[in-house]
Amino acid sequence: MAQGHSQEQGQTPTAPVAPPATPPTAPQAENVPGSQRASGNTTHRKGEGKGKEPVYSVAENSTGSVASDDADETLQCPDCSRPFPSVSRLNRHKRCVHDKVNDYCCPVPNCPRHKRGWGRKDQWVTHIKKHHPALLEGAEDPDQGYSVEEEEEEPPRKLTRKRKSQSAVDVAETEADREEPEVKTSSGAKSKLRAERKALEHERRLRMKAEEENEILRRKLRNREEMFLEMVAERDRELDQLKMHTERKGKTDTNK
Image (tube, rainbow, N blue to C red; front, side, top):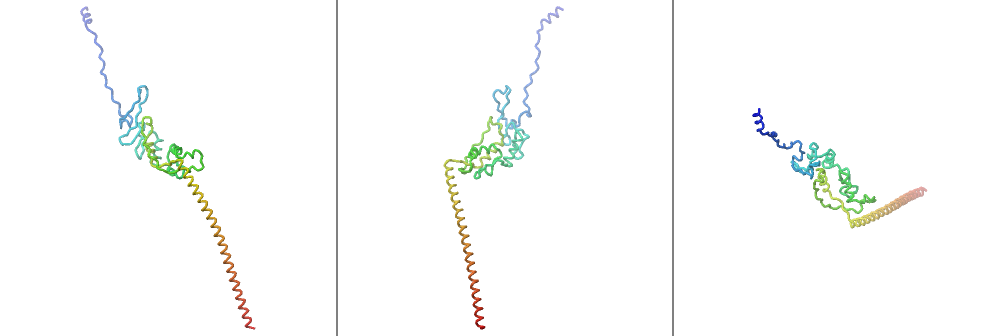
């Protein structure tokens, strides 16, 4: 017993063996967003581990078209295959880009946007504030003082992190807006056009007055002509009667 006890005291206790550590597995492809799988461009905010969600920048996919990372792959345009985050954006893209439905047109007649308008009301309001402020002031003649000129081409919009929610339809609509020239105004052009309009109006009134006077003269000439023709016809009838009376008188004299 003593010998067995001494053998137990001589043995050193061994530490428990820990299980082998498993290497971290790579995230599955199905949990990664669609545009992140195509481009691989991912931008993380500072302090992401404190409960903030990562922000994905707008990048080009494999087909070369611009798409936002929060867009659902199931919502794609059937004409250009662009993804959209919601059904409303997809419908607006179809109406404005492919169907070219223009519900908002400029009310100024000589404006290039009078016939070709916009599909969005905010673009129409921006155009009115910028080029036709007289409409907002309640002017009687909003077309007065405006001339059609070439508009300088605006630089393309840049997609940044702050505007990541803007989809490809906004870029397409911006490019479509730059195709048509807009109306620019200046104080000198206003006064010049106003003077020309007054001169044309005065000339139009003079022309109308001259036409009225000519019509009155034509009526008087027609009346006098009719009176002269009646007098000639009356004289011819009198001459015929006198001739007939003379012939009858000559016959009666010969009979006697």
